[in-house]
Image (cartoon, rainbow, N blue to C red; front, side):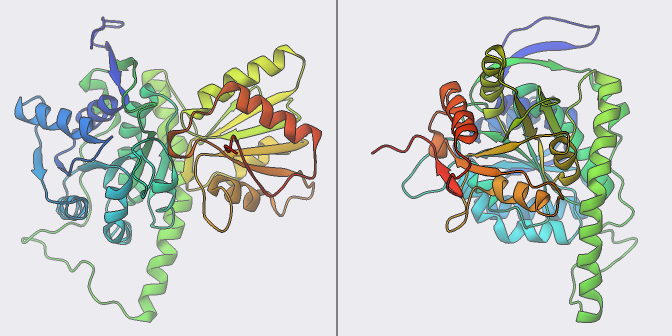
Amino acid sequence: MGGGFIRRGWVKLVITGNHAVSYGAKLARAEVIAAYPITPQTEVVEKLSTMVANKELKAKFIKVESEHSAMAACIGASAVGARSFTATSSQGLALMHEMLHWAANARLPVVMANINRAMGPPWNIWSDQTDSLAQRDTGWLQFYCENNQEILDTIIQSYKVCEKVLLPGMVVLDAFILSHTSEPVEIPPQKLIDEYLPAYNPKYKLDVKDPHTFGGLTSPDLYYELRYKIQNSMEDALSEIKRADSSFKRKFGRGYGLVEEYRARDADTLLIVSGSMSSTAKVAVDMMREKGERAGLLRIRVFRPFPKDEIRRVVRRGVKRIGVIDRNISFGSEGIFFQEVKSALCNEKRKVPIYGFVAGLGGRDVTVEDIINIKKSIKSNNRLKDIIWVGVKK
């Protein structure tokens, strides 16, 4: 975990994605951390517990008996006005499901890191986005990171956004590909982070000196409007994410946006991906460009709220065909990013063929060759199936 100074007060460390999560939560000054260990998330909470024990982070670390309890503790902490944090994976996230709804519907800006891991059985600890995407309708913002630097930065940004729109946020990273892989990460000085992310001070909180009722019984004549407001806040989050990202870039020199375009301006074939697979896809795009092929890439960083306008804007430039590569599956339907992209484009005047590919489930490697072959299959055959499985063994 070595490194050197790059700017006065800045430090560059070679750390895993899990430790990037931990440093992000530390820099954000999380005040309450509740967690239950689960592979491949364990390093995150081990590091945070060490930071708390060594008084590097002034926070309450709560060791709970389950992930359900971890989220319940974060909900309680956030309700009294504390900046709360947790992390989990796979079966642990599934166990939290009930409380995910509670955090969102109670308008509590809890931030959680989810290290994508396949759902069992059979038991599998490797990367697969189905765990987080199964929670896409719970009211949580979802960010999908490409590398370890983005993980740290997104933890910090997510607090700024979530505390503005009063909704919880999930920062998602691939198991082992990012969680246990070390990369250089720049750590900004705490003073600059504090300027960017002031202390959390909600207007309403549980306080015996100023009592309010939270989460009580609500009749149909009010419940409907409360859900309407959550939807409005989720839509407002699109502009808040862009605003938080722009101010972060001005202060720290890095920005990510809702989506990332890579060599997409004149592309006739557009590949849409997310997470760490994006880095592999960029190499594939470069190789295809060297051969004169007009391939381009669109990385979806923010899945909830879904960036429909950004996708439409890129496609309207003249894209002729689209391939969406999913490291997930909605059984009985299709890849989940594929569903969302089709929905975003279904009312466009110019109809562009869209093809869905499922790849990499359970940590199966997705190679440069796989992505090049996906592009070839799109261009050579406009009558592909609705869903194409990449690399199935026969």
